[in-house]
Length: 244
Ligand code: GEK
Image (tube, rainbow, N blue to C red):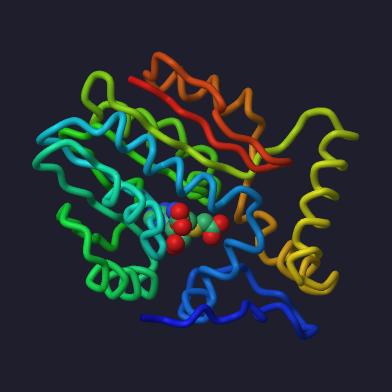
């Protein structure tokens, strides 16, 4: 329905780079931006569908928290095998939710989808068998992350799963440097200039806060999950599975 518009938001020098916001301008280029910026994004989306097939229970709900344009929602919608399920997509960007409504309406999947414009921190999960935080926790203030994960865990049924994908950091300084460089090479290979890379980096500084994989593992256990570990990683981008 919509063409894929190229992301040129940081292509020209800006006098001042303001904090990144998920506004209409970002919505218009989002599919191109995320594909060219996040190594493994397409694989992760595809595997969310794979995991939905395995974990989603009959008569239960699935939550896509920070759904943007609904890529993970659609991956679940097309692969859920269990009967009488519902998917709830949540995002606090009005522009994202509005475009996502159009994307869902144009999709032929049969599982009902409800989209909610809200802060993830305020959402209470009910009767959930699968929840997805696909590159969203990184935007939640660090001090709010544990309570939010506790609440997500409390809303999951036994055996339910949380998929959490994040940009991650490393304690080892040379390794951190190497992963950052390899990621920037990935972006360069996808057509971003050094100026675009530098300005985007300034825009997300102090907004996208990455943590180490150990910090994620420990906090997920503290939040009540039983089985926690990484299932995908490419450079400083990783995805974890946490099972209740
Ligand atoms: C995908 N999951 O394509 N409450 C609700 N939404 C939020 C909040 C919050 N507190 N903070 C940020 N967001 C998607 C990609 S993008 C990742 C997720 C990225 C929303 C924000 O509006 C945006 O849509 C999304 O989280 C993050 O699989 O752009 O790096």
